[in-house]
Amino acid sequence: MAKFRITGISFDHMHMGDLLRCVHDHPDAEIAGIFDPDRSTMQRAIDSFGIPEDRVFTDFDACMAATKPDLVLLCAAPANHADYTRRLAAYGVHVFVEKPFASSAADARAMIAAMPPGKTLAINWPLRWVESHVTAKRLVDEGMIGEVIEIHSYGGNRGPLYHLADKIEVRREEVERQKPTSWWYKRASGGGSLLDYLGYGATLGTWYRNGEAPLEVTCVTDEAPGIEVDQHSVTICRYARGLSKMETRWGTFTDPWVIQPQPKCGFVLVGTEGTIASWDYADHVTVQTRANPEPHPIPSDPLPPGERNAIEYVLSCIARGEPLTGPLDPAVSLIGQRIVDTAAESARQKRTLPLIP
Image (cartoon, rainbow, N blue to C red; front, side, top):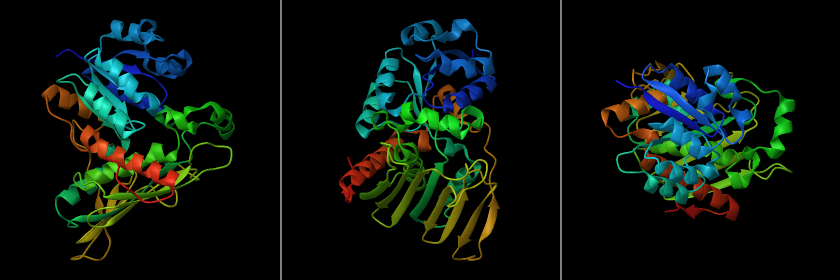
């Protein structure tokens, strides 16, 4: 079969490099081209993957016309997701959006509506590809802990500028130099820890609860002097049965893929018959049940072929003509986006709010 032609659009998000590596390593895919208005942001990818000069573009329409992609990877700042998706829809391509979904539920719905018939819109949440979290979902679906009635999530890192693709570290001095101009620290661009990380807890939490949405949301944020976005948020969601807490943090002492910070990054799922603790990048989950109250580890399942990373999964779904499921499904991600929107507005108004429609 012909290889999937995949084009990368915008290098605002450092995950573009990780996604292009998945494309580069996939036997049935090729990097057709890359685009960003600022050529310098693409240089690391050009060098890493040997992308020839005639596949590197600083003009969007020239890139799309020349590369003729089947699938586009979109790693723009969240505030630009909707506009780019509308522009991409005119080219009749599948669109793969790196988290978060959008800067608002209205934008997310506009993205869904813009997609041409028969074309896939995927929203990637990298924690979906963490073996411990996938194992936790299997155990939930098998009924090990009964009905999920409470979820605790903690997500964060030292800050979004401390690492590049492939988790290459950036020195603190360089981080501080970039902060004043980085979109990550601009409210209008969709910056802040809440918009960066709450979508993980909200979207995977919706997945764990089989699509159930909360009734109301309460959120508080802590903003540092001189920075216009939050770096710490705590959100409480009230469901028809039970409460869930989702916390986001920029400023942990370590990154969870190196050393688990305290509190640990990941999820605690509380059910009517037990509890599962699933930490980011762990090789096991810890389970306690009514029948077996002594906490015990269960090894993390290896991800199966076709689901070992987001690119592999999305391409296999497209090839088979199957819909996306779980967090990558726009319907699931839209519930997460509604939670994020309601949390941001709750923090602004300093009161509990019903879930935004």
